Length: 341
Image (cartoon, rainbow, N blue to C red; front, side, top):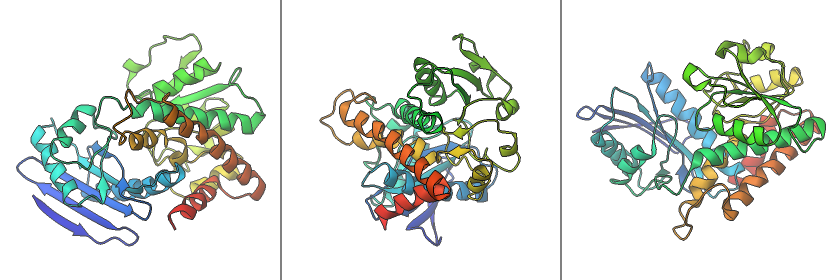
């Protein structure tokens, strides 16, 4: 394997690993380790260019620093990306594990978009710097429950109600997070409007769910919009279409750029930053280090207590934004930086 170190201002370490024999083409970025080793998942995704892959890795790694700090974890932020190719092999993941080992514990990998529990188990055969590979950990449902807590807090802030009864939630993406967010919201009395790029997922199993085409989700009238698919979807094109009072979702990097937080505020749309709303996954993954915990899930007392606290943090941030006229991203960044600076 050829490993190239890349110097990037503001980052502890960035490496690019290429292994022609297995086809591995991976970046790992360690953004900040002041609170502890950098924890962040490995994304398996077909990037069009190496530049786009590096850009995504850097942005995701920085986001993990803020997410882990806001979640109250003694962990820094990092991220890995593997440029997807047809088929996966044990040898590919063995090579990736070698790249992880090359950072000597600065970076701890885990699951992300495109990586499965099976993939993580293959990686774990060749590195100890990994979490979330054991069957007792379901980060998807924990992430969804944290998003649900954010939606409940946002609804409480917007209208003072403790329930979603009579409220409409528009959910973009019906994957392992979005589908579970829908279930939590339905149980709390909400009506759901949903979409996904895969039409096979849009099956009306529940009466309070209706479906729209993917490009129409931004225009539906709803109380809260919950992006749970890809990033970069809140931008100058989509924000003017929104007909919601607030946004809280599970997708990473929802804003097209940092400046779009201000654009949302100008439109009086209250936004829960993604790295606060979706931090439930990293909370349960961090707890999986404790080998004494059996059948770890989002309802485990030690996990649920931390997940429930997301409600209080979201409500606090929204109130502060309303009081000071600052964007919620600025307030969240300040809270995180208080911890790691």
